[in-house]
Image 1 (tube, rainbow, N blue to C red):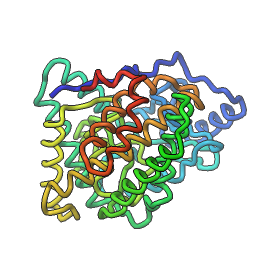
Image 2 (image 1 turned 180 degrees about the horizontal axis):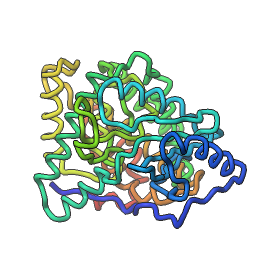
Image 3 (image 1 turned 30 degrees about the vertical axis):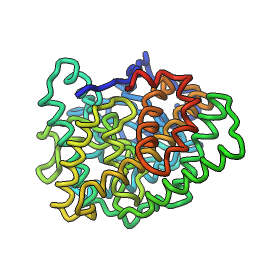
Length: 368
């Protein structure tokens, strides 16, 4: 297995900084109010991690354990989907943070702490020392947990991953990547090629059976957790994070997301091995996957292509709109993913030719 890892370093912050004094004061009033219930020690508050969105996470100690605080400014983020999906996950007996206290109006949540061992870091370390058994154990555990997620999480109340949402996501690519990042304006013929590609990808996605879709199921959103830290009826590892955007959508989406990740890549032979293992478990569990693996792999690749085009747009938007340029260093990874799929299937060749001029301005060759 040959991974290609991200250049993004973990966020390092000297302390908890508040840009808005009013929000800071409101936060401390809320913490003071719930501190006696949970044994919180306000003086231990410190950064835990940040997010590509406007959310951030803080860690605070209690008398017996630590907790995580989500700080999500309501002008930019709505914590209600997180609370709702957290409840679905709890009902499904999967391992995710519990919402212990909430101030929905102001965007503050107190969560159980799943620790600091991200799948991404554990995988990168294991690869660096050629610890293949650990890589296998972690990836197989993630796929088993995904099967359990698709079996148990009730998708009926989740928003639909419908035609409109799929197209809004695809529209991020020409707006932020093509035009804003590269300064390219497509001709009428190129715009027609793009429209045809979007139709093909959306139709493929909508033709798939639907399940609960995490929508960002990847190593950076999974935690390695101690089995003793969760209840006996909970699948201990991985811990699942960042699930607030969950939808009801194509069954292959989260598999593609895990195999072709934003921050670590694998040889295709390895991708296929893990995909086949997932498909076998899914069939055994009664999930609606095709009886022939080949009929599952093609829609998975097309679903992944839709995601990769979306992510190319999102990473460029993070750079140009949100002042977070580090994500754009991984553009070559996604151009590689997209180009590989576009050159493989009939009907997608025009997309490959459309993105090749953009690829010439990046280090895509490093991913071949």
